[in-house]
Length: 102
Image (cartoon, rainbow, N blue to C red; front, side):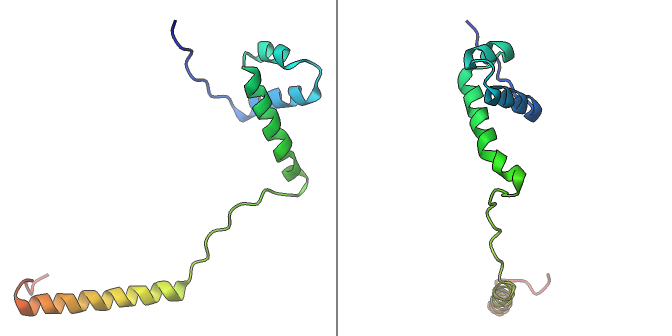
């Protein structure tokens, strides 16, 4: 028996199924047969809809804030690395391990 290929459902389809589940006019089994989806999948989409519904009325989900970048620290690090590179370049040139031409 061959496996059924994985299906990707659109957001509109998921919303339609989840709303039908929230209405409660049909059982999960009936909805599963109607939309040709496993009942567990309908339950998951229903839960996601109910959890995300609060965002519609103003309470947006908290998104992880981007890490604050300290520009002064980054510029200091760039300066430090530039000095190291210049020092190593001059030391290797003096030792004859690096050609003067670049």
